[in-house]
Image 1 (tube, rainbow, N blue to C red):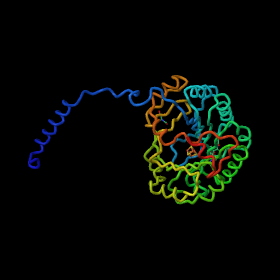
Image 2: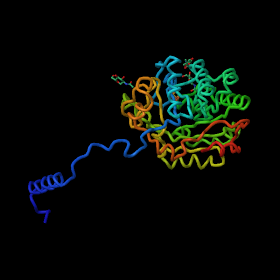
Image 3: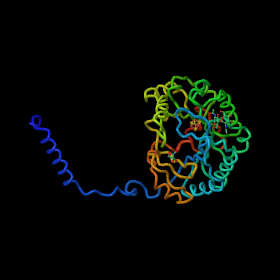
Image 4: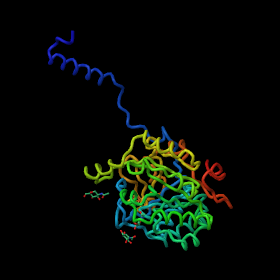
Length: 338
Ligand SMILES: *[C@@H]1O[C@H](CO)[C@@H](O)[C@H](O)[C@H]1NC(C)=O
Ligand SMILES: *[C@@H]1O[C@H](CO)[C@@H](O)[C@H](O)[C@H]1NC(C)=O
Ligand SMILES: *[C@@H]1O[C@H](CO)[C@@H](O)[C@H](O)[C@H]1NC(C)=O
Ligand code: SF4
């Protein structure tokens, strides 16, 4: 019957339908207040603090590069850390950019977090190249975990990805040795992407004995000002879920392997940026600085997926137990999980 109606009659029918639906619909409510769906007070249990964005590499899949960057004066950073601890922070991870571009403030913050704030877990993520034995000797007591990013054990692949200068693997072994020597848990982070997805890393991982090997499926995150060209570049690195699974399957013998597939990859990390603002994980405006508005107001103004953080065991990688050195498949791993 409808098939032989004229187009204008159909249009009229459609309009009537829309009008009827509009009239019958319940009145619009303002969006539910946050308190309807989540606890009134959010607790920033675990914070990733990107205190510098500075990094002079340009990994093809990383969109957060800057060769110069703002960095807050140390007293401000300490005050922010103090506020976070008062709000319930128990774990902090220092990230960048490259944290070891600023070893002095970094060391001072480690000491502050461990000695004054008594945080349970203090960690750093680094590309490794600027890590020195003297730093670890001096700061090991205030550092639970050192995570080093390494995407390939073939230097050509590292160069192709954009983050190698040909010495990364040797440096990785040095760092693993220093961590063992000074009692810091050594962790390995690998971004699995188009260029390394076929690699067999078993021998190196077994030799390096990280207490945990986190493998992330490459995720291209669009920044505010990314050009189409930049996105296309990034997409050269993406792999399918199946390819990622194959990579993990190939390395299933490594008990320390923790896969982080893209489908789980969370908006759940709470990120504090170099201006002491929380980032909104849906890409909206960051919060105001926590020094200006306090931790709670800053948290309320951004979205982060606190529930999924807890669900997927985001509390992993806790403090280093006394006298425990870890090791791939070592007994420490279970104790560290929450
Ligand atoms: C690590 O970061 C520093 C500072 O940006 C850079 O000079 C160095 O080449 C990087 N090393 C690797 C292996 O990515
Ligand atoms: C940046 O990278 C160059 C080599 O690409 C290196 O010589 C220089 O030391 C790096 N700068 C810093 C601050 O690490
Ligand atoms: C993006 O571009 C606008 C306008 O050029 C600029 O004001 C803003 O700071 C840029 N944002 C970033 C993150 O570079
Ligand atoms: S080294 Fe890290 S921060 Fe620097 S460009 Fe590569 S992924 Fe990004």
